[in-house]
Length: 320
Image (cartoon, rainbow, N blue to C red):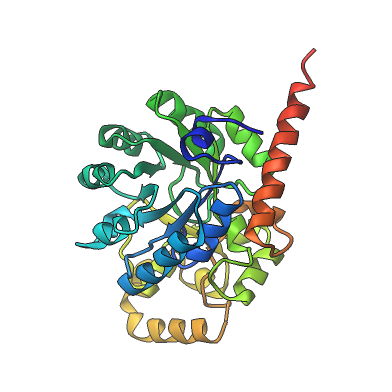
C-alpha cells in the first residue's frame, strides 16, 4: 500500500484523485472513485444549479468515503459555493483564478481546500489562500490548462510551496504515471482523461469511443471551442481537445470566428445533438494513447493503484 500525505489526509487506499471535469465527473463517477479507494471530485463546471444539486446529491448518497467538488474559480456566481458546501464535501478544489476570496468560507465549512495551479504565480496565490493541497497541472492535461509541461512543473511547484503537499496532474493515465508523480515530489496524481473513458462518466458513448481510438498527436490546445460555446475564458488558459475539422478551420482565426457566431453557434449546437465530431468537442489529454477501453471506474482505480505499487517496488529493486 502506498502511504502519502494525500492518502493519510483522506483515508485513501490509492493516491489517485478524480479530476473534477465539468460535464463528465458527475456524482456517480465521483462516488465510484471514492468507494474504490481514491478521492472522487464532482465537476461543478460553470455552476449550473440544477445540475450541481442533482450530482452533488448523488455523490453524497453514493459513498461513505471522502469525496469533494471542484469549481472554476473565475466563474463562481453568487450562491454557487454555498450550494456546494451545503452538501458537506470533504474537499473543495478551485481552479483557474484567485482562490483567496473563497478560502475562508471553504475552511469554515470544514472542507479541505485544494487549489489547482499551472505556474508559480498561481501557486503563490494558493499559498496565500492557505491551500491544504496544491495540484500542479501540466499542459499535457486534457481540457483547460496552461503551457508548462508536467515533468518540470511538478518538482518546481513542490519546492516552491513546501511544506504544502502537491498533487501532480497532466498526462497521467496509468500506474507508471502515478509512480513517476510520486518520484517528482507529489503526494498523488489527479487524473481526468482516463476517467472520461469510464462507464460512470457522463457523456456519450460515441465520445468515449473517440478517446479509445485517439492518439496524442490528435490533441491540441485551442480557444475556438470556448468561443463558439460562449465561454469567455481568461488568458492564458486554453483547452486541449481532439483535433477535428472545426478546430482546423478556425484555429488562428479566432477573431473571424467571433464575428461569425450567429451562424457558427447554431451549426455547432446541431453537431453536438447529432454526435458529429467533425465539429463537436471532445476534451482529451496527451495520455490518450494509453487508453484502450472503457471500463468501470472502480476497476481503473484498483488496477492503476496496484500498478503504481508494483512500479515503485520495481524501481527500488534497481538499487544495489
